[in-house]
Structures are given as C-alpha cells and as structure tokens.
Image (cartoon, rainbow, N blue to C red):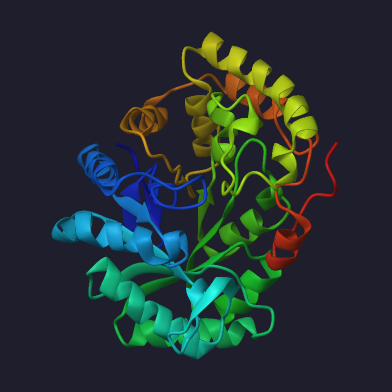
Length: 338
C-alpha cells in the first residue's frame, strides 16, 4: 500500500477508524467480528489505527488492545482524550462530557494505556477543545505526557486555524483530525492552509460521509434508535432525499470510472494533497478491502474534478451537526446549506 507521513511516522495512505466496531452507528459488532476486522486490516497493510477513549466508553480501546497489542511494532496507534464518560476522579458520568482539565487528560491517558495494553500512544489527540480551559493548559498537559514518555506526539481534533496556531506555540502539533469528505468541506476554509503552513498532517475522519458516500444507505428510517446520525440535519428525511439526488450523479460517475462511489470519494480525498490521511471506519471486511482499493486507483483528473463539482457545501442539504454539536466544536463552518 502507498504510504504517507503522519507527523514523524510513516503510515498507510488509508488508515482504519475504530469507532464503528462498538459505537455510534448502532450497537457495534460482536467482539469476534471486530477481531477479524482488525486483523484483516493489519494483514492488508493498514499501519494507522485510530481510536478514542470515547468510543464505546473504552470498549474500542479495549478491543484494539486485546487484538493488536501482540503486533504493536507493526502499526502507528492513535487515540484521543478530553471527551469521555469518566471524570478525572474516576466517577462514571451519565453521558459524555468534554473536559480538558489537565487532571482529567492525565487520568484518561493512564486509562487508555491500560486498555490499549501499550507503554506509549504514538499520537494522542485532544478530542475536543474544552472552551472552559485555555487550549494552552490542555496542550501543556499533553506536552508533559510526552515528557513522561506516555505519549509520543500530540494531535488536535475539530479545531480552528487560530486554535491550532495557539496550541502549536506551546508544543509542536503532529496532526489535526477533522471531518473532511466530498460533502464536508469545512477544512478548506482555513485549517488545511494552517496545517500546511505549520507542517501538520491532516487526518480526515468520516471520509465517506458517515456511510452516505458508500451509496448503500438509501432509507434513513432504517437507522437504529441509538444511531448518532438520526438527529443530524443532513440525515433528516427531507434533506436526505435531496442529498440522494446528488449522490445518484456521483454513483453514475463512479460506475463510468470503473470504481465504486466509496472508492471515488476516497480517491478524491487522497488527491487533495499528500498530507491528507483518510481513516474510514467499517465493520465489514469486504468494505475494508473496497476502501483500501482506493489507494491503488489512478483516476483521470477530469473525473476527480467532476466528483468535486457534484458534491460540495453548496449542493449538500443540511448542517453536518446539530446546533448543540456545532457549539461544541471549534472549527470554521460554512453557513447554512441549501
């Protein structure tokens, strides 16, 4: 597989996001299925695995640790802190909380190391900036974790260009992770430029639009009660119907190009720059192999340009997040979409 730089690490051009196996899009999968998926990814050449303390409230890290710890030397491990269900004193809270206090980040890291069965996390992100805590204080604590050898490099998730610059002044930031895909272009406003100015890698989560760009989700009424997509404006029935009209054109273009819509979407992202690293998640090995196939595609420039012209912020109906979730992130956002 092609490789790219993730901070000081060299990793597979396409990584694996490990949220889906236990969190967000339903109840996840049986541990045995998750184990098969993780090992299949490793055997297929994936060397960038991304998880978080939040995912399944520790379940994802536990699975990754159980399955991949024996192969720790073969991959780069990323996890996240600052958004969990466990307070700094170990109290389990009723729902997720954003907490960037140094004491909480330190406690979360120690818990993550135990679950991941590792002595050090290669790339440790602040999952969300807690706006009640100066970013300098949160990053300062992450820098102390680096000094202690518990973390090798630091990342930030869903932050603005201005916040990235403030954080980078405290300690070098290896990577920024933000939602980026054909239907979510917010990083193009400012943060991508800031990353390139500072030499920071960019990790694109939800590169397939939370399943939308795969082309299989045509009926949002089929989403489970606990599926995080249900309240998202883009997945509201009226908006989704409009978005499916655009998706049909993208599917036709993919068929014309001899690939799947998921592969076209990932190839488009990879083409945006050698510093962009998509981390699609999945629970199925066939989808995993399909996604990884995008790294081997050589598509005409004209096809990629047509894909970008079909799907972008002005052709997508609905915000990516609810109003509450938009208030929690620190990213530059396009105004209300059609």
